[in-house]
Every structure is written in structure tokens, then in C-alpha cells.
Image (cartoon, rainbow, N blue to C red; front, side):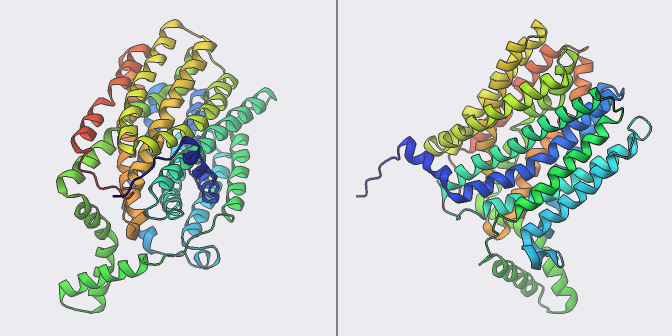
Length: 457
């Protein structure tokens, strides 16, 4: 009989000092930064140019692109970008191409007035969202492929580092965006947001330089397994003509990842997994979509928001993401999902208290700290959960499918967040209570399947 000794907390923490974790941290930052551009930056830009809450809320529909990036994820698993792939690798080539599109879009925004060109502003925002969502597909694949398939603890630590990186890109990017806008506004520039977007473009260039320090593991079985799937489809069709080969390649590219997912989990469990993933972070998304507007309405300045929501929030997120990773490693990812779901619901209620008490920097700081703590725990558990579900033959496609289904819940439903606040006649307290109860259906799904899941560990 073999006896297994549970690792100590310090032994668990050593996982974070693996050199691969620093590379995953960078990949997370690259992924999180564009959300600053089309999230808080775009929202405040539109608000300060006189647009109402409902318009800003519906403008957030551009985030729905993240919900559908699985549709073109198979292409990213199979297609190689000419020249770039040869020079920097398959995954890195895709990232650099998308970063270039985001940079050109920021330059375009710097030349536009949203009051007179709202449709164009939103269209460019949509281009940024598409490029960012496409980038996320390959960033996540490259991140997962940094870790061995059966290194379960390293995968959970990697998920924590990816989340730290994402929030670093998002929070510190937000600090830079808000403080830059405030600086240029106080300096007397009327087009202070347009100048800020040029500053953010410099960050994009810096990210591309840093990406060169992330090695790309060469695939061993992926190409061969994909080829075998194509051959299987050809054999089923009973022909080897050019048209059949093309059809087999397309079918293998698009259908293969889906068949693999349902075959591994079984139809009923697979459907329940998708239901849980769709619903888990809806309440957080409703809160996040309107949070900056809420802060402004109760009297906080852009500098206040940058300090408390972005700066202080980043420190809190980093600390509790690492702790959340350790919690997931020691208690298991399923238990971590339940705990983080309950925490998310509870901390949303602090914003109700802030809404009813009025402007209070102390309460603002407390609400942000606890909300970011809950979000950190939830995101680590969620990323580790779906990372441990994927088949390495279709890393990009399956992760994108699961992540985009989660995003679908957060973006499509949360687009009505501004309209919900208006329907409540601006009663932010009730709004935040509603966001708290939104997590309950997802936890019911998770409870139904918790003993039947097949995770790579």
C-alpha cells in the first residue's frame, strides 16, 4: 500500500517560482490589457462626451465577440500565418498579428470625436474586440501548453499566474489610462482621451517586445492527431479526391474538437458543464459593466477610481489570486468553485451598502478590496477548471469554446445592465442585490455534476 503525504503550504507555494510561471504572467497581462481599452476607457470617454447610461451599456455589446471566438478558434489551431509563423512560431505569430491590429485601431481612435462619429467609434471598438478575442484564443493555448498535460498542481498555479497577469494588464493598464486622461485634461487638452489612446499604443508595442521572451513549445502529437482525424473522415466518405480531402480537413478542424469534448465527458455531463460555465460569472459582469459609472455618479473622480478601483484593486487581486491558487491546489478545484461563487455573491452586497450610504472613501476601499478578493478566487478556480477539461489535440479550440461560453453569459446578458439601472430608477442598492443572487443557478449546475467530472490532473 502506498502512503501519500500531503504537501505543506510552503511546498505548494514553491510552484509559483517555476520559471514557466513568469512567462504565463506576461501572457495574462497581454490578454487583459485590451479590456481596459474597450471597457473602462471607452465607457468614460463616451460618458464624458455626453452619452447616457443606456447607450454606454449597449455599447458594451462589442464584448459579445469574446462569446463567439470559438467559431474561428479551429482556424487558429490549424492555420499558420505566412512569414510570422516561420520567424516567431505558430502561437506567437497570431498574437503579434492581433496586437498590430489593436495598435492601428488605437491610432484611428485618436483621430475621432465620438459625439459626431459614434458609429465609427463603436465599429473600431468592435475591431479591437475581435482582435483581442482572437489573441486570447492563442494566448490561452500557449499558456496551457507551457504546462505538461498531467501536471495538475502546476496547471492550477499557472491558472493563478495567468489571472494575476490578466488583472495586472487590466488594473495597471486602467491606472495608466485614467491618470493619463486626467493629466491631459488638466493640462487643457480637449482631446485628452484621444491622446491617451496613443499612450496605450506604446504599451502594445512594449508587450510585443516582451512576447519574444516566451518560448513556444513545439507540438509533438497535435499535428499527427489532427491528421488522423482528417484521414478517419476521408475513410468514412470512401474517397480521396481533392474535394473530399478539403471537406475532411474542414470537418476535422471544426467538428473534431466538439466530438472530442462530448466523447470525453458524455452528453449529459457535457451539457451541464456548458450550463455552469455560461452562468457562473453573470452577476460579476453586471456589476463590472456599470461599476465605473456608479463610482462617477456618487461623486468619485477619475483619480479616485484609478487609486481605489485600479491601483488598490490590483494589489488585492494579486495577493488573493495567489492565495486562491494555493486554496485550489490544496482543497481541489471543485470546492474552490463553490467557495468563490458564495464569496462573489456576498461581496456584491457591499456595493449596495456604499450606494445607500453615499460617497465614502473608506467604504469604497473596503468594497473594492473584498470584491477583488472574491473575483480573484473565482477567476483562478474558473480558469483552472476549464484548463483541466481540454484535450491537448485541440487546446485552442476547446479552451476558446468553454471560455467564450462563459463570456457569452457575461456579455450578452450584462449588456442590459445600464437598462436595468434605469428601470430601477437609478436605485443602485437594489441593482447590486440582484447581481448577488445571479450566481445561484450556476452553483446548482455544479452540484449536479461535481462527482462525475473528468479533469486532467
